[in-house]
Image 1 (cartoon, rainbow, N blue to C red):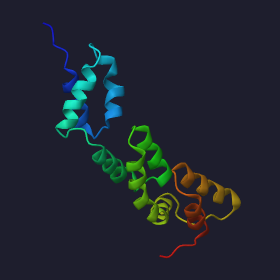
Image 2: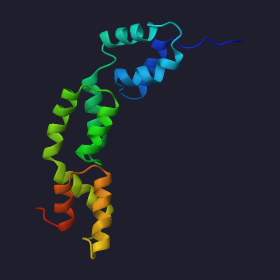
Image 3: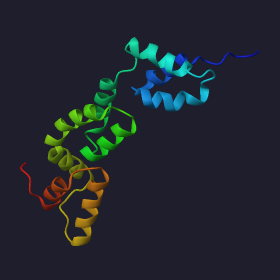
Length: 149
């Protein structure tokens, strides 16, 4: 009993059913399955024409899923790795930068119960927030306790 391999379009739809993917991501993931040159591009063109592949939805999905845990820099890096248009990425990040301090504070509060008591704790808390991509100004303000409650 032999099973037919799913088509490129079928594989793409299966990937898209889990979460939003950019065209570049789909090309990267499906390239090994392309048997005829140009067939992958054709399949992705059809899906894009039908609205299954949409860069704006990818951006909104990433921002929605990651904004509560990550800073603007990490979200920017994640969006760029998806091969999205730089102008669209910049536009999406403009709104995030306004809430950077509040998001950094929320992440910090979730991880640490109190302000740092010594330089070692200060450095640890700053590294924690920096690893999540928060801006240095927001990190300094949060760790130093310079924010409004």
